[in-house]
Image (cartoon, rainbow, N blue to C red; front, side):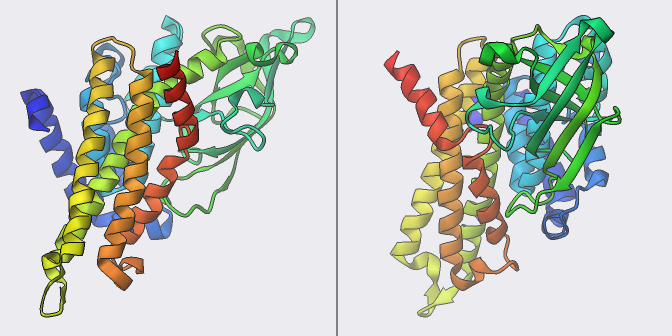
Length: 383
């Protein structure tokens, strides 16, 4: 991929790769098994600017472009998909919408602490009865002008919130006008510690186990009107813009997982001897490795294309959906083949491909299922 990268991008890749292999990879197995969010490493990520990758420098960010962003997410995810997920969600669907739709006051209030990593962000859209159909959300934020028109009273239950257990700044999708359907959906910035803001139990997930995914419940939670992001009724517009950007990040995460699985498959194939030769000598194994490598490179190219389009200020929604679809499907296939190359050992937690297999599977679900992405892509091609 060097032919697409500037010298600055190569330096960023070298720096993040060195950091991820030195600081994250040695504890990746441990934090997965213990379901532990490693604050000691997260603080180091923050010091390197990985929680404010595209935020402007004047607001405490690193001021990088989208290509830099995907390089960072891929390399972190290669070492630990859980931490790659944390950084991707924080940057793309928590910090970015505030930058894009927030006013000057909100920028000054929220961006510096998010960009510095002092506070972790979360995107709270999914509910027990609202997943792919975002318009079905039931959470409400109502202003009673007769009592106190300065505050929204928020009630709702958000589930599967990535970063939920550690997030201090949450973008909540709520109905500010339940009578007008999807046009009444808005985004409220909720802050942990507000009365009525309750962090629920952590989900016992198959993969991404070092990320504290949980529910967030709000009961008669009073949130000042100044925390309304954009205007009332702009919720779905904000959500779609955030998810377009987020899909590039998750696609980069999936490429990182797939690359890690590919490298482990190659390493094991060279070491494992059967029928008196390393299994890498057998054509069936070579065929798998060839397919794995080709699919990983194809996915990476699609991710770079979407990132470059965004940096050029051109439409990238279709390309982001294609990249996320391709990369997530590839991650699952490549991790599965890596397990197969390992044979019985691939099903053992003693080898990292077992973790890659579990982590890869969810990339086809969050930030838009593969089925939803096919709908988005087909709609664009047919229009």
